[in-house]
Image (tube, rainbow, N blue to C red; front, top):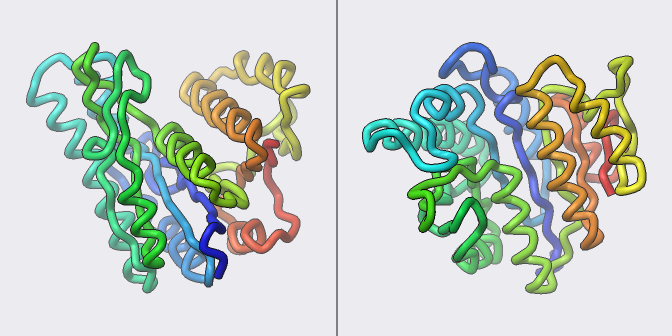
Length: 259
């Protein structure tokens, strides 16, 4: 096993929770993801996941992205994010994956919504023991706003920057979502997005009549395009039976590649 070879995995909140049903887990979908990840051998992995209808439900009431309304409210947002993480880690451990939960608020601080300080060396020590760190979208303490919220994509992108600077070979980022990548106006998967094609695609997404999807897809794509500047490809795929493992081993898979 190459000591510098690494794959980053993002599990979308919509793939593991029912988006429109608060605190409802998509149990079979989560089991399928865990089974597929368990097939990966001799590759170091870091996983991050969204909180779906867990974190979004309480955050929509109490805030957190630019400060919070009251202390009990932000405590609830924090608890909800951690609750779904425990469920994900339990599912991974059941499939014999040595998953270790890492609470982002304990290793990251922010200032005005931007990364201020981080302590990612603990993650490096874990992967070098062949453990699988599992992070998640979380409340982050902010020196200007009291708190902010970093999505799973944001956290994974900051971790990627750290490991790129440490000269690790990040082979790819794989994002498992509700859909087979990003769709065009005819609901067909867009196979490739790069910095040339993105402005036109972004305009279409902005016209979407589903604002929850609009912000999410733009955020995913622009985070991935930033990583592409460092030569890291991102694969956005659905939770089909063989999609994840095919993407891992380099086989053709239905989804969107961002490079």
